[in-house]
Length: 298
Image (cartoon, rainbow, N blue to C red):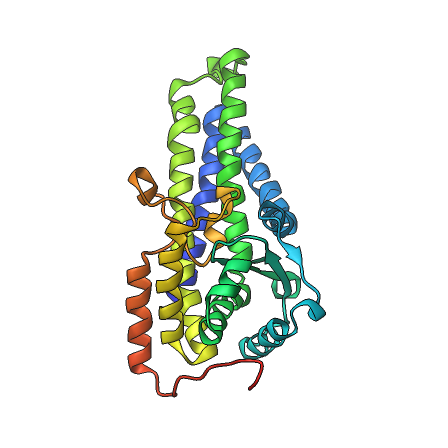
């Protein structure tokens, strides 16, 4: 299952990059556009690799938290990180009553986990352990990098389409053989089809990675039902107290913070909570180990 998820993710990222290359070709009208598209995709990916964590943390006003400010939370994070087999990420707290959490960073050695004040106050120890373990799995699987690259590529495609299509409309340049940069099919692709397709691909990547992170949390805590209870609680609270910030970072969160009405249902960044719970319950049925709660006192 894990290998299948990785293959799906790589395929979707390749498809997303391919859209940018195709956009460059359609806009320029010859093979030079392929080179422009490849270059733009490479630059976008590098930028997201290096800067995405700072952007995500700043978007939700997350503050780095010293050990003395939350010693029990630090001890919990260290124990779970040790069980996950990764360095302990930097801990950030988000000053929001919304109950949610996310991980970010380009690799396990440069990772951060952000918890809202609301989730810390709301969940009991075993459920908070499960949420942290879910985010640690994202770090271990390098999903934080995957999501950053996917989000940047999708956003770059939209930006590229708008800027360069306007240039083609108002400053068309003659091409060899009489081809011009204001091809109406290319404009339609760049302004409508490509950004919409990129958004769908990005959402598909996010949903695939959430299943893997849920399974990882069950493995780390040996208590899949704790994450079931946490997801049920977070789903209910998320509708009452939404988190405010840039919606581009919605895929990072453990629970989708966006509206689920109308067209937003098509663009959901997460699988349905019901489906995630069902999968976790199946893991619990086949688990041989007894549930174990990790806490600072253990």
